[in-house]
Structures are given as structure tokens and as C-alpha cells.
Image (tube, rainbow, N blue to C red; front, side, top):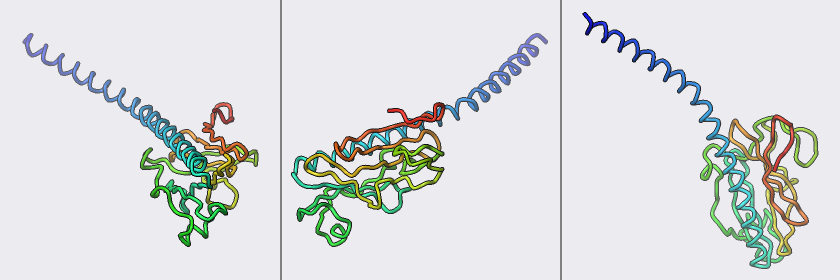
Length: 196
């Protein structure tokens, strides 16, 4: 009788431990998933900034304009680097005509950070000071062009590229025109401000 009572107690203990483990797992999974989205978005924004800086270095090294073309579907996060071959800057029509040549194959943000693309995933103030951007707003803010161009003197197309996963933190990659400086900013929802 004592042996059967001990077995019953062990079964109750095992059920309690199993229930507690399930509760802890259910609580931890969203936290881990949120941390992974944060890390992926961070990696995607910094990868894009490094890609733009590479284009700037190529322009300085080659002594001619180099541009990063943003794909027509921002959700794909596609970019491609082109070099000016006739001295008038990189132009979309000359890319289409084969005059301005690709320096690198098409690249996708999602290849380096799963689920990350050009997107505005929450209402944020526009980094450029032009009001508020709603969820789903155009994430490519470089004027009417699809090109971020870098000149051989170091200047660049001014603008902002918004990057993020479907949820989680919002990042902005800011290009300063006169200096060509590229900065990564993260939106702090708590303060409602952009932070370096």
C-alpha cells in the first residue's frame, strides 16, 4: 500500500511539473519571438546602411557616380548597385538602356535578415520632419527617384529608407545629402522619438 501511495504522489508531481513547464514555455515564446524580430530588424537596417556606404566608397574609389536602385516592390527589399559609365550620373533610363552598368547582382534584405523589408510597420513621425507616417506608408523617401546616388565628391541623394519586420521595432536609414553620411535610427515608441 505504501508503494502504491508513493507512485500516486510521483504522478501528481510529474503533472504539476509538466503544467508549470507548459506555462513557462507559453510565456517565454512571445518574448523570444519578439527578441528575434528585434535582432533581425536591427541586422537588416545595419546591413542596408553598410550596403549604401559600400556604394559611397565605390563612387570615391572609381571617381564616378554610383547609385543603389531600390526595387519597385519595397516588400521584397530589393536593391542593386550601378555605376555611371558616361559621366552624367546614374539614370534610370540609362540603366534600362544598358548604359549605366550593374556593379553587383540584385540583393534582398530578407536574404540577410528574414522577414525584414522596406516598410513602415507602425505610425511614426517622418524623420525628415514631414508629419506622421501611418502603418503601410511608402517606406522609400528619396524624392521621386528610385535611386540613392553617391557622387565622387562624397555627396549623396538625401532621404530616408524605412526598414522593419512585419511587427517589432521600426528603423530608418537616413542619408544626408551634402556629406553622404548614412545613419541608422530606431523609433522609441515610449518617447515617440527617433534614437541613434
